[in-house]
Length: 238
Figure (cartoon, rainbow, N blue to C red):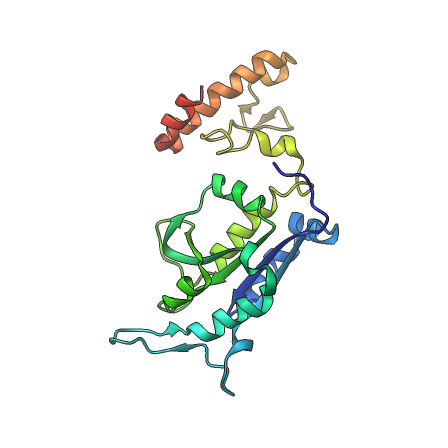
C-alpha cells in the first residue's frame, strides 16, 4: 500500500443527478476522512456543460430504438475542464453494466492512483465516443442493470476510499473478505449468550494461535457456503 501523499486522494464524479450523493458521501467514515483532509470527493453536474439554454444532456439514438442516450459533448468537456492538466494521470472510468467487473483487487489498484474520475451513465447509456476520446475504463459492479451509474459510483468510491492510508486502520483491511481471495471469518461480540446462540468457546479461550487456526477454517467454510467460486483462489494461496 502506498504512503500518504502530500494532498488528499481526489475523486471526481460526473452525474446528471448530483443530489443523489449528498447522504452517502457525507456520512460515517467518508465524512471523517474528508474532514481530516485524507480524501476529497467532488460531484459535478454534467448539465453545467450543456450547450443550450435547456441544459440538454441527452438525445434520441441514431438508428432508432427506445430511450435516450447521453450526449458526448457535455461529458467530455466536463471531464476535460475539471481534470485539466491532470487528465493524463487520472484513472477515468465509465459506470457501465457491460464493463469489466469491479473487484477488491481493482479497488487496491485505484487507491494507488493519484486521482480517480467516475462518469455516471443514465437512460440507455452514454454515446460510445466518450470512452474513446477520454481513454476511459468501463466498470460494472455486478451482472445486473441499474437505473443509472450513480449507485455504482458510490460503491466504487466507498470501496476505494477506505483503502487510502489513514482512512481505516490497516489491520482491519488486512483480514477482511476478499483480501486473501475468500470470505472473511465470522465475528462475535457481547453478550456471550443471545437467545440460546453461544459465542464459540475458542474465542473465549485467550489462545491466540488456536483462534487464528479456527478463523482460517471458518473462513474456508463460509467461502464454500456463500462463494464456492472463490475456493480455488484461497486453496492456491495456501
